[in-house]
Image (cartoon, rainbow, N blue to C red; front, top):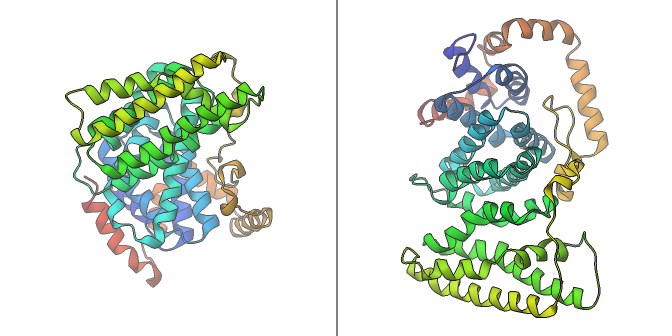
Length: 387
């Protein structure tokens, strides 16, 4: 990777992401997103790790809920604005960073990092939809999840990341359903394999309760509804219930439970799931109900949720939970404040274009005020913990 102003300025720029001063963090993030990243055709893993270390502390220092939500949405939506190779790397190092830093996150900050993982999983699916659910692309992106999360050989105490992904996976997949059988098989593969190979009882419970128990319940309710003649294609029962009725999970659970590679303590759970899903499939066959699979080519491409613009001046309300809602009044106030503090915007933009904005930003922050002294710990971590 080549940074126009040199590696030293790149490192200094990353350090500014960890500043305790919000204005400094915001300005640095704008330079990275609008000026630096778009010029990169490739980035070394080492520099991407440094970048994510800085972004991690940028989220760490975001205190107020509206600020946290806007920042998180901007970072997650970048997945759809980067070239595919860079998007894969960005997502991969994000997962690595979350696992590496997870043990150091205090209880008061956990919620915003839970939200960060949730938003990234949503954009994970949005990226696949943007590429028309190409099967090879699905396999490659799911492989990133397998290597960085489910079957990673790192030594980090980051299982909380795995638990959160298992907890939100089905919920974040919901806006993109229904999907074809081949796509569902690929998306659910790491969870099914985890139930056979992982000895982590907590992870096993998360996968079972948040994915397969939900699908089993919805499948049963769908059969009962169809018997009564009730049809609502947008209902959760129909959308979720179709998955277990068109994907024969029972045989998969049996094969994995019978495999010599299966974790001995997990066999009982897998065989129990096999029996439950076998009953569901037999009930479905005897009911005479027909379930049609969707044609992915005919799905409405406008269903992808509105994304946060890279400029960050607007917030996608579709990406904000009810409890995380940001009012129009707050947005207007933010825009007015920016306009008042950026009167010479055109000249600054021109200067940034000529210099990539990196040297100016670094030099303007060389003499930091006393309030920024507490970023030393974070900066040391960026230098030492990026490997």
